[in-house]
Image (cartoon, rainbow, N blue to C red; front, side, top):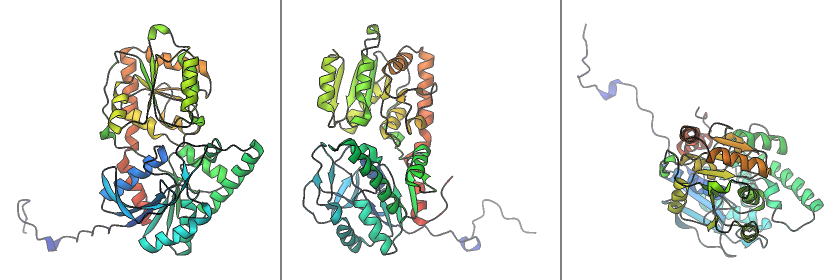
Length: 410
C-alpha cells in the first residue's frame, strides 16, 4: 500500500479541474441622479458602479448631463474608479435646487442609442421615472435582462411641485401605476430594506421584491469609542421637506441649557434658507452650524467628533447617512418611520421617536447626552455591530448573482 506524504508534490492533472473564473460582464446602469448630485440614490449608484469596476466588470452609466446638451461617451473617475459615462441632455426642475431630468418623451430614443453603442449583458436601473423607464422598455424589447432598484418614494417628488393637492394625488396614482408597468418588465426588483420591499409590494402590487442594502465601506470611517468632551449633535442629508430638520431645531430649544449642545447640519437643499431663518427665530444661531456640502474627509471628521446622529425624516427607504454614522460609532436618534427602524433598534444603538413629536425627540436626545460612560459606549458598539451586515462587498456579491441569474448569497 502506497502512502503519499503531505510533503510530496501533487500532480495538478490528478485532481479535479478548477472552475474557470466567470467572465466579466458589460453592465449598463441607468440613473436619474448621479454625480455631481449629492443624495442617497446618487451615492449608492456611484459606489455600486465603482465596486463593480474594482471587480473587473465593464461599467457604463447613463445619467443626466448638467446642461441641455449631449456629450459623447467619455471616461469619468467616480469613487476613484474609471467608468464610461453617457450623459444625456437635461433641464433643471425650477422649484428644486439641483434636480435635473431628461425630457420623458426622449427617453426611449436615448435608450436605443446607448444600447446600440454599449450592447450590455445586463441593464440595472436605479429608478423607474425617466431614464430607467426608457431603458427598461427598449432593453426588454431586445431581450436584455433588466434589474430594477427602487430608491424612490413618489411622495417625495411631490414636495417639489407647486400644484394643488388633488392634482398631486392624481399624479401620485399615475406614477405608481407607471412604476408597475416598468417593474413588470424586469428580471428582479430590489430595494434597500425589507420594510421598503413590503411598502413597494403593497403600493405597486408587485411580488418578490428583494431587500438589498445600499451598503457602505466601513473601513472608510474612523470610529472613536468613548464619551465626548462636548455635546455635539449632527445631521447629514438633503435639506428638503421630508427630512423635517425643523423638528430637530425645535427640539434643540427644549434641551437643558446646561448640556451646552451644538448642532451640525451637513448638506444643501431647497429648505436651507427657511431653516436658517427658523434657526435665528428660535435663538439658536450661536449653537447651529450649516456646513453645506462637504468633502468626504470633512464629513468623516464631523461624524467622528459628534456625540450622536439625529434624523427626523419620514421618507427613508434606507438612509446611507445613518449607516455612515453607525460606522462612525455614533448612537442614533431617529424617527420611527419607514425603514429607519431597520437600522435603529430602540434602546440598543439609540432611540426611536414618534415622527414630528418635538418633546419626545428632545427627551430621546437627552437620554443619549446624559447616558453614563458605560451606557454610551454600549450604544456605540451596538451601532458598529449593527452596520456589519451592510458591508458593501455583501451588496456587490448579491447584485453580481442577480446579474448572472444565480442563487443569491446567504
